[in-house]
Structures are given as structure tokens and as C-alpha cells.
Length: 94
Image (cartoon, rainbow, N blue to C red; front, side):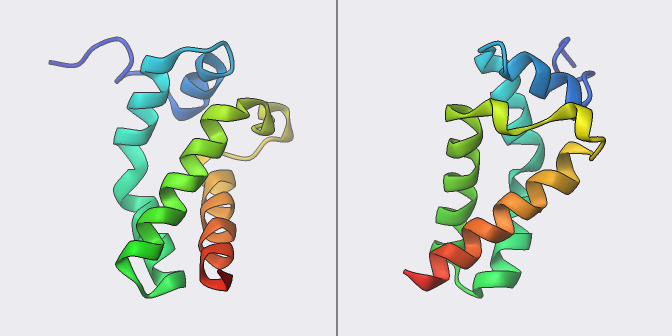
């Protein structure tokens, strides 16, 4: 059964996260972890580094949700893809 969070768009979830809504963050993580892991893995070619990169990206998002700027017009997934790839690149440099 879907709850009220499952029907929200990513952008609506981000607006709620910016207000401190932990459940919205959980939904966003659950919704997109696999897709972003695949992106990170393509960059790192290493499972542990890819997992760390995705975790780091989501942690950054939770700690500083204001980095998402809805008024810039990008979809959340397009914007967060760049955050994840940057985190994966940083992970490889370590």
C-alpha cells in the first residue's frame, strides 16, 4: 500500500526535506539508491567505493538540503546525478 510520501515527486520530497522531514528523505533514498549506485559504479568500477560515494552524496544532502535549488529548474535526479558522480570521482582520488 502506498502512503502519502510515495505519491510525491522528488522535488516535493526535497521541499519537505528542506523543512527537516526525515520520512521524505527516507523515501528519496529508497527510491533512488539503486540508480545512483549504478552511476557511481560506472565511475569507480569498485563496489565499495561506489557505495561510499552514494552514501556520502545522500549524507551531504541530508546535512545541507539547501544545496538543492528548486528555482534553478533542474529535475532532482539530473542535479543529484552530478552530486553522485562528483562524490565518486572524489572517492577515486582518495
